[in-house]
Image 1 (spheres, rainbow over the protein chains, first blue to last red):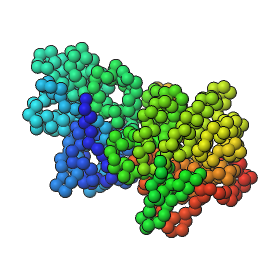
Image 2: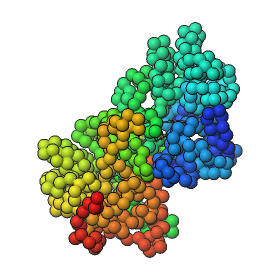
Image 3: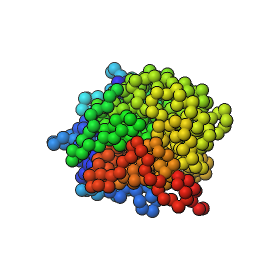
Image 4: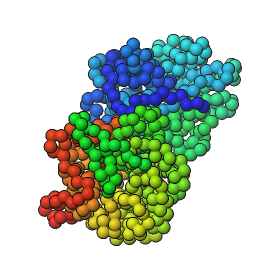
Length: 280
Length: 330
Ligand SMILES: Cc1cc2nc3c(=O)[nH]c(=O)nc-3n(C[C@H](O)[C@H](O)[C@H](O)COP(=O)(O)OP(=O)(O)OC[C@H]3O[C@@H](n4cnc5c(N)ncnc54)[C@H](O)[C@@H]3O)c2cc1C
Ligand SMILES: Cc1cc2nc3c(=O)[nH]c(=O)nc-3n(C[C@H](O)[C@H](O)[C@H](O)COP(=O)(O)O)c2cc1C
Ligand code: FES
């Protein structure tokens, strides 16, 4: 895969939060990043922290910045981009970011990592997302529509409240939820298998929790379908400095932050990587 | 490689210092293993070289044989700190010399290579081969590992440290820095032993031993079992050890441990550090080294700076005899 990487300025900078709103169970933050590039690659991510009151408080965390895929980027007239981030509150960092309001500073470094590469040959793009893993698929979906590629979008969520994120997509989405409260009950791999077995040759782009990614990886390997998987791992730096975010591949450990987060499924023995899990 | 002409500070102040005779444009180093300039260049491009955050670059510790490092998870966030069990992944001496060193030589600052050996023969080979390379200005000895022949942590024992340094001193034409572990009973005594054996400088602190348990299973969280703590959480411990060591030796002391601002850096210098290093703070901001250097220069312009790169400062009066390191009452 040729590297899908837009370079980042080599320092942390402040963006201004323009809006923060609820999308079902998630929070969508829009921030004006005048100092960064206008064209991050889908699948790239930013390390985020609040500009004030990051740390301290009852838990003394967060201390390090947190990694977030950008969900959408719109070039700003004066340079830079308006960036959308979709957040799920799972701990002190995501909670603090969710409290940001318009006009407040958002500290960021990015865009970082290697994003999704172009589809191989005339294969049709199939986007598969689970939960908050939907975020990096939004900009990829926009980009594919722009070049006339008609992506298939298959999303799975825990519940109907989480599934409200579907409204952010322009194209029709095949939806499933674990509890059957929206779309069809069950896992995304069922509609994915139907599509891969019944449709034209595909390239799969996937992001989601490790068990889902592993199911997608195994299915694509079985069907000999190329898969680009956006991985997650606990990170400290996001730019290759700490060697903390490694996951095992067939060629040994790779750093998710510089060698990923998007990797070809064929490089992995399993996407059930031991790189993280919430700290709790 | 010759260092750039000294950089001028915000008010045109000359920040240049010499460390063991190596001219530096300023007093800010990186802690070994906390900045991978080659990976950072992939993320930031050549802008990284134009605005390089450090005045001397220290490589990640290399070993004779390649190492994969510890199984993940390798990171755990603590209150104002980071616990890591990275396990020294590196390409090994041959891989480093062939692949990494030529790229590190493109950095706009002098280079220090950090080495670790598990026997004295291994260390000797590492030091001889690295010493032969013109791109390298200094060599740092990471002694936070066991000598597999004696079972002793090299840097935890003054005699063990002295024996290692004595032999290496004869093999090495470049300034030799000994990086001390804070997990020793008496870092001041280890530092004095290193100086006696011919070390040209000492650096401290390395990470403090620590551990974290999985919140649900209560099993060790880190793949390596235990880990090393860094960041502001260890700053007070590091400051005390820097003061103790600076009181025990007359060679320059490279101070580090939780430095996050120019004010922190000024404290380490007041405690006797000749130059300082930034580690974990770079994870929060890749340009932290440059910011801290600017803040420090701003403070120095106001007359509170105090540098000691070649000589001895008076030992701090610690009420326990000069240079002694005593554990706090528990
Ligand atoms: C490349 C990438 C892109 C991401 N994109 C998004 C996104 O668009 N939206 C979103 O809501 N979240 C995203 N995440 C997950 C997000 O970074 C975590 O949810 C967040 O770090 C949790 O921090 P916390 O303080 O809220 O919770 P805590 O769980 O308390 O986090 C503390 C620490 O736990 C570890 N940790 C937390 N979550 C994970 C994880 N998933 N994997 C491994 N280690 C973990 C980290 O070391 C973290 O610093 C992404 C993660 C990565 C690596
Ligand atoms: C992720 C990580 C990796 C490290 N790797 C090394 C290493 O390879 N060699 C070494 O001598 N010190 C290593 N250290 C220790 C640092 O160089 C430094 O001594 C320590 O982190 C204290 O400084 P800080 O609090 O500013 O980070 C590492 C520290 C961290 C956090
Ligand atoms: S997060 Fe530090 S190396 Fe990947």
